[in-house]
Image (cartoon, rainbow, N blue to C red; front, side, top):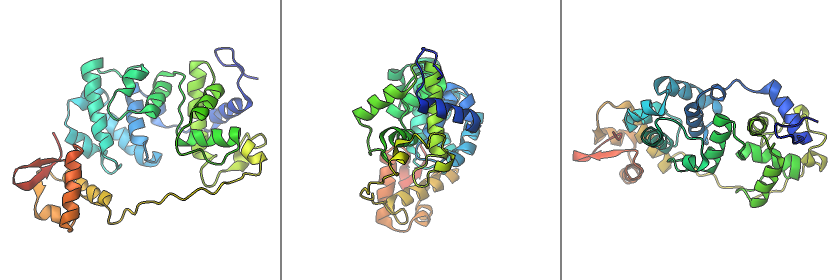
Length: 296
């Protein structure tokens, strides 16, 4: 059985998925980039599929290859470059983080969990991902894909709970290789496996290298019917209004108001509510004569 750099023997699951990853790893550009490139990718990949992120990430890094480059431009530039990735708060947080990195860390992404966690918009998962994928550090990278693979193969449960439990964290800590390099590669491998094979709805169990030992499969793949979370309707929602307004402002070289805003959304009350929310979030600036623009 293979051993990691700390002399610990890999579990059969870890060894099998690392072998699988050696063959099936996708050539995603942020896997071979700077710590800044990794941080940008983690902001963009939150709730957004890889295929939508790829062209935006590549254009972003070509324009802003460092935190200093982004910090020297405006929030409006960042919001325009973000385009239609959605959840534009992430673009504002990324710009704010670039300013912090420039002013406090000389333009470097820190290799320290507390410093990373203090950046705007960076939570526990992003901190762990940057430590692993930018610096090769051992950290528990527990995204949805990773949690699902471990839940099925180890615990025999089809889907993980909505929130990470202390027991789940302890189980992951036991499973993760002890050496930094091997743990970081395992984090990438199990995430990739969850994205491509052990998927949420239609897992490709016939392609699974651990099918025979998977606890969930050996139990007959039981599925506990959980309450279906109600998906908020997008059409006609405030989210759609906010998106329309942001698209209008991104495409406009000058502040807009009046007829232009009404063309984006005709319902005055809903439009004003969405505008107020965007202003409160720092994504839109209210100017004189009831005109609006992206922030400087």
